[in-house]
Image (cartoon, rainbow, N blue to C red; front, side, top):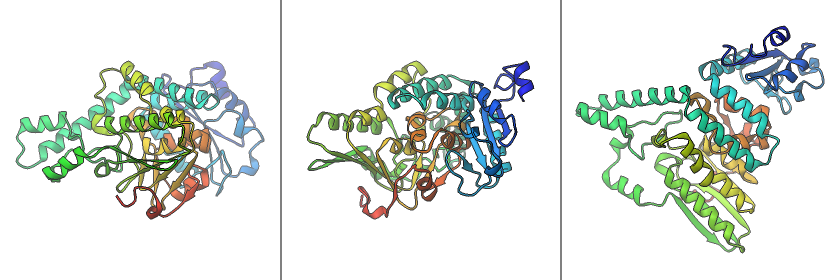
Length: 390
């Protein structure tokens, strides 16, 4: 690898066809490769079966991800859940499928980890907007629309014109599944009365008890997917909190079966252009609004915490998770990086190497693993959390 790099600094890159570099951490040259890898346009991974044979300095020399077979490995190492070979295969596959997004992710983490968290949020938005204009996100969007069209066409009694319309404009409140797809047929089973009640209910509930402000995500039928209305509700709530000198604490929670399933996929691809999207993302920013309050915030999470549902709680000073909570970052598979501040918030809780693994792999982790890594601070029953009775 050193010879390749010395002969051609672009040997490992998306353009060179090798967007990931995997190194034996026990190799005598591992530290030198890690130091060079810090500046390379590729994902740099070090692997070790036994950490006793790893030279001092490998963990800090610049590798994006550190994998080991050793159980309960210390930070920044990741214990490969099914063994190193399976973990490497998963990372190679994810990187090969979306090399531009994968490399942008690690480059972003390298830059943003050492700067102010608010600046890191803005840096993420630049990367997200660039990828929005790229071929990988365009391909994911086209595949998603094709699936929607096929599903709509398969609905009994739906004529071709109506099927095309259903595919082009998915139901605004269709429920995201646990993966990164939205089922356009879900709305077919919802009565008009139920839909009307859901549309009339505020996307965000605000309750005040003395010096405590409770902010509750309130789109339970779609697992609190972050729509424009929910985003604006959170931004407004945090703006009110920032202006109220008598508040001492904020509690953030969600109604229904999940804290949040992430961005509302029915709104993906609707922004006119990436430049305008960046302007909106940094002007009406949920994480920047939360940070601007200057108040201690406790997030109470449960069920699915996907995408923004994992990224936003990580900005809070304390995160309490129900036992059924799972966290997952699926954005790289969509040709993107996290867009709700995840590359700023999650590395500051679990470290950049574990954050890179979690985001690039797209694999879920449960509440116990999140507690062990520091993504959450406590596991508590859902029943004691705000919004549990709604």
